[in-house]
Length: 602
Image (tube, rainbow, N blue to C red):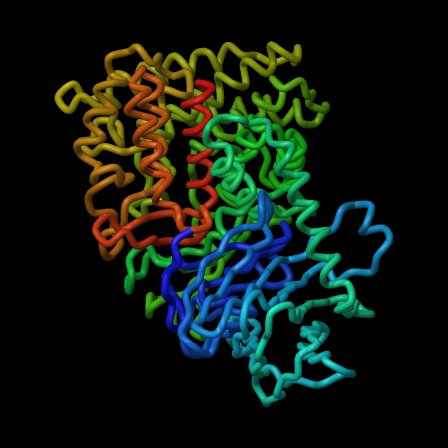
């Protein structure tokens, strides 16, 4: 990799890498600073939050004191991050991970299961490092007081919660943070192990176990990656996207969050700032299918089980999003204790989209259920009953306007994508009941499917524009139309598919990048191009036989990932800066989907 000169604290979205343990996650900058960490889970309060407050926010920094160049990689096919700093005096290597153990090891060891392990190793010469540990729990509302408990164990009592940093380095204990300097020579090693506990007694990390813990973590991730059944030409990048999606899954429940961050802006300095640390049924359903397609049926099964649990209280209606445990009430509030990414206000916790009606969700969920059944799994009696009731609900409710996939805050409208996905829901429901022999009156479903098709083809397609539209009878286009060919709603050789691709590229394209829609949406500022839509374009081109062009586009899009293979939600098409919450599950999902369609036609 090319060495890049870094001279100070970095704050570009694309300058971060992700580490995690499938319970929570942390963002590590190129300068060796962990600037985002929520505890004890993805949607918990942030403890390290300089990402959203450059000067007052909490961080855990290990960085050279002299100017340096940096290169970093994930070790093999794992979630263990290796950052190498090179100064004029020498080279030092920083290894970061959130430890995970195999099930066998969990039963034989006491282990802090919410922890970050950082190892420093001298490679050449000697490098002087500065270390700062400055936690700011509860979204920067608390300024902790440190206590030294034994040799090298610095603790913060958060009232029933314990934050502790164990290290073999000597740090200066200040009222609000820990600081230190260390010169690391070739062959020297040091460790800093941050652990969090809400249970008593707390488990203290043992530095003697740091090295084997890193090795065990690498082994767990490597074995998971080895199970990937995709062996096409893009295996390494597909694996990185799959590992990212696995990091965004909540192991105890099977939920999959949209991103590990909140309020990274779609417009720098604007207010398009949302909390994505929750499970959108739409994104999670497609992620579960992607897992199944590349050799991870257990992840698919875990999601289906979580979904049936999460939706029990609202059944047969589905909510748009849930928290990692299945709670659907996620009131949105603004957090005044954080200034926002580069001043982008407000910082939001919770998401008001949970109150919206988004009918397309039924299509994604039923598509996932069909993939689950098609793979040979059965549905229990309760799941079968719910499936029939949900399909009945769709057959009678598809006629109503909704808020649509993009959650545009302008009231409900008749979104074409929502209608198509209602058709998908009923189509997959019919397939499932036929395959499993479920007793159901499917005649209303078939009637509704025919009515949806007629409405979409007559009012949702414009002969004048040569494209499917955003809304029935409207004039605006929407990039979701690129996905219709993959749903079975319309065949790839239908002339309307090719003309839609051409029109959408012309109206919504900016070079290789795509906007999801254009026009005023009631929010301030113009958002960036939407990266998933560009990967949808790859799949659409492949579907109509333009495979060479699709492959060339895909390979150019892959270069838009950051240096460790991560994508955000959006990108400024002029500056190339990443925008929005990061890393974004939907983008990595779309990346995997495009690769599969290029190589396997899925």
